[in-house]
Image (tube, rainbow, N blue to C red; front, top):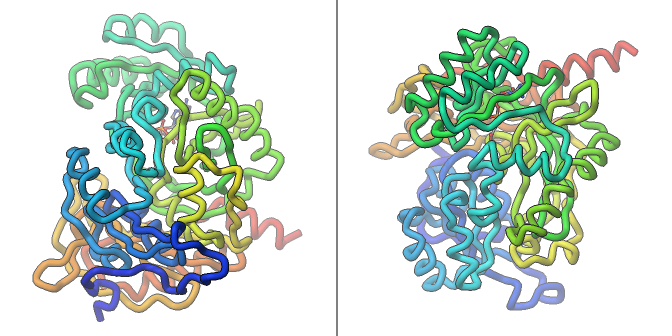
Length: 455
Ligand code: AMP
Ligand code: GLY
């Protein structure tokens, strides 16, 4: 039963045809989505539902995305080829999923030829591309975050270590696929991390190191859309970063997530907007490098209020999957208003109050060396649930695992408990003996729901 892996010819996207009275010809468009993971499958699924979308293309995509879009073979590092494709296909909006092409300036190359793009240019994407850049911006704009020192040599970092108490956080400055952060419990561990990073274990990303104070609290993710001037909140989520149940074992890209994060109350969200998000947007605009796209703030909810752990310049993966599952607004209209600098003219996002939860099915061995090639057979998802493809490929017509995180089994419910139950019921119907998942996702929120119920 491989219903989710039909490879289709050119896809026209809207399930609903445009209502001619409310849409002009001009607002209908072809869209190009860059990326090929679970986040991009969720984006493709939502973009394809928009009556504004006449044709959806994706590069490189994956077998799940192929259900929604026409896959194209484009080298994302070859900006001229991407621009050329956009011109040939009259692309009216490019949506960039992952951080690497953004840090590499794909949005600049597209904006330079007036192609609307959702995602920041290289200068603003430094918010994710360089941890030191973000820390300096926080200092300049008085944004609450952990105290830090930037170091460009092992000797300087080893000397600076004396000023920090334990545990201390050692970070490679550049992109490290979520692996460049060590929370050192001892000085020896911190020294080893510093030597490793400057010794090249993270390549050029470790040529500079940031030492940070350790912050205590609960973590939550907060999202905001901005066109460089206007800003709107775009929901919250909580991720499960550790591979093992009870939040144990090594860090991963994320083993599952739910949205919203009730711990981020609306009062706290207002505080985050006022003291973290808006000052960031204003400072980057004042520097002449406005940020356009989604700002993904990793927050620590400390006893002194929310503090910024880090920024990402893209949607979270798998946080995006739960946000898209809850989004009721037209995603094309929203992202286009960001790309065109007209976010103030948009109605803003509307989300279902029902929570959503996603379970990551990973290939055995993840996050070390995942086993590739294991066969997968998918069930049909019921209403209110969806299986997003993250690391899959087709081999001789059979769906197989091709990455560490393979599937994102996602469901909505009236409570997180119900969303979790629906997601795991679907997980149990997936035939993927080469995979595994955590069975305790949502535990924080479910404990809160149980406590509420108990009165
Ligand atoms: P990052 O890649 O910066 O999000 O860091 C990965 C993880 O390390 C975060 O999700 C936190 O769990 C943890 N972390 C990073 N910086 C700090 C900090 N200053 N204090 C406490 N935990 C941190
Ligand atoms: N799930 C965390 C991230 O996307 O960075």
